[in-house]
Length: 427
Image 1 (cartoon, rainbow, N blue to C red):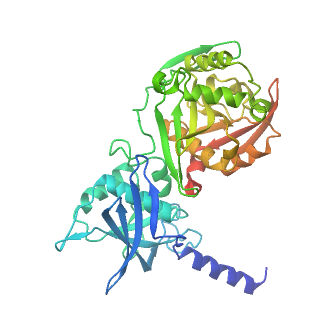
Image 2 (image 1 turned 90 degrees about the horizontal axis):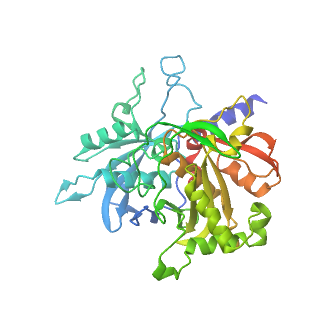
Image 3 (image 1 turned 30 degrees about the horizontal axis):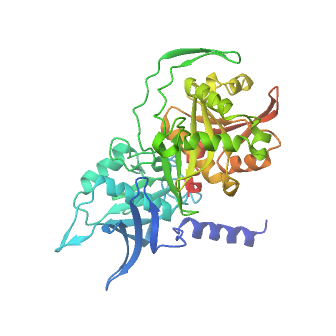
């Protein structure tokens, strides 16, 4: 590579690292929170400055200003070495200055719940940033909010040994921590898990069946039938995705004796496209017995997927250690106690596109449901190019190829750390 080319590349890299990318749209709806509240953004200009205002429904909750002259990077391994302060490969972001609305000349407090909603908006608008450096300006309850951010892990301080002007009051909001649910459970009820539960204790248990003999931790009780487990607004398509615990009985008054879930499951499995992959074509009674078997199995949670309330697909979330796939793990990657796997199908043809959106969300839900789950596994047919492409987009990689008695499969792994390092895809 020529010297001129090298210099040009270094200049481009420097410009890239010193610039916070602007979102495509900043005026209007940013996102819909899991319980239906809406966050809007709008530009406001006065005689001295231009701010972006964030509103929760119709209530003005926060302002932010991107300081064009101040940008920071969060250095970790370089601290205490000769590279501290000069490493150019670490992404930089402009400082976000946060303030609250003023009422009768006095800035207002902002609640922790609304602070989380505002952070959600920032990571939606600036989703490519791994860290957003912020500083509270004219926020009366700054001390309370700072403690919330640091105790929850949503934000972190820098520990640079070399002083950087202005950085001592900056808090780095972490995109990875945000999408891992930091600052939600225990603080407010606006998170993606609509009925979060405490971490289940680790107790011994055992499974013996025709296909598996395994010791493993005791699994928590199943969710209630019809319970909405997870909801997330996908800004890329302007729709909300939901995961709902399978309801085999439904509402007799509403459903007339056949639950919506059971009717959809039966219809889908008698579709040639679905049957060619799953091989479960059969009568309604056969399918009811199939679901009853899963509901009685502590190692499986059957759920239905919905786009804006409309049923679109079915998923079985399994605990990998007591699933037959565990027998096919190679010696270099033993199955973990809290590892989970997926079996998925899209039932409605009109929802066949965009598989990466719901697959990323399924992985997101699994990691949120138990913080001890460090990996998600898949075992699709080796020739299923569509799901393999979607899986790669969702963070899976092909660790091995193996043979079930009935198909050749790819053993796909999605480690927690890798997934949450690429959460700009949760959009």
